[in-house]
Length: 153
Ligand code: ADP
Image (cartoon, rainbow, N blue to C red; front, top):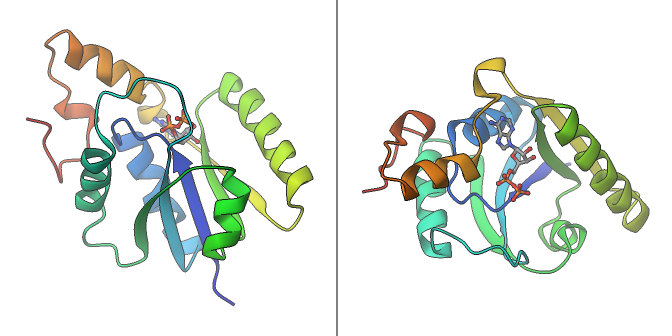
């Protein structure tokens, strides 16, 4: 049976923290779908097309990785794509609290879908998309936080 996982998030933009989680999860799954959720009301810095393109470039050499966008429930998107696993990264206790609640709600909605957590490598612990956006909005250089496979400018 194919072990398909989705890695959901807004990826505005994808960072080396996200990239590391996906690359470390590759041996666990036959396919990983990086799934850009379109539900959030949050104002985005990058368009959906830009975010998809950044992710496609990041994983261009990894045949097991696909990029898709979705709206609606994450568990419904899992069923649509035959994914039995939801992959998430955990950086700290705050992430754990939040992720645990979402995973348990998803478990209640769809008991066959398992959420799999990987803890971050310490060097990526402080990296998150919203700080990258802040730095960029204030004219700083963000290259060190982003996969080298693409550039923002
Ligand atoms: P969301 O919009 O749900 O906050 P993100 O795009 O920020 O989604 O992140 C998607 C997933 O990647 C989440 O599981 C998040 O915890 C994880 N993640 C984000 N940054 C890092 C990092 N630096 N190290 C490990 N995991 C991370």
